Amino acid sequence: MTRRLAGAALALALLAPAAGAQTPAPPDAAADSFADMLRRTDPDAFARFVKLRDARDRSIADLQRAQDRYRSGGPELRALTLPQLRAARRQYVADTRAFLDFLDDRDRTTIEEYRRAISRLTALLEERRKARAELDALGAE
Image (cartoon, rainbow, N blue to C red):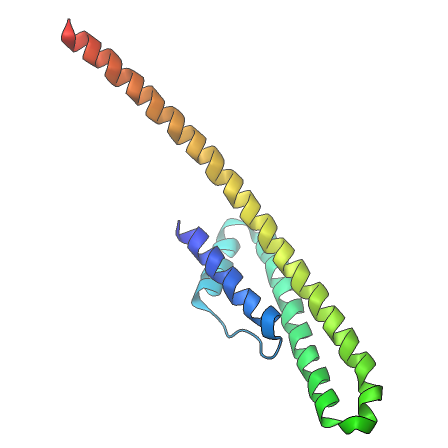
């Protein structure tokens, strides 16, 4: 359950930059917890997570610099900086989408693991219900 809460908190933290694209999200305890869990349980996924997160963070910084250049250039220089701004925005979108796709894949995998665990637990509960019914029948004789 803690893993799911950390994943949900991480997803919310990651969406914040996507909405405003003004400042990167500060380090977050839930994000750190999620990254630590990945590092311990799936080193390959952790490496991919770090790579995608870092790419997204770099593209946020690049977008901020491009926005600053665009704003500070004045009307006469905006035409020169607009292509850089658009390229930075496209890169930010691509990197953020890749990061979110990774998180979605992890969440889908986790959901499937939980479904299998629920099925196993449901079967155990059914077995115990049948055992109780048999015990009740034996006790009634």
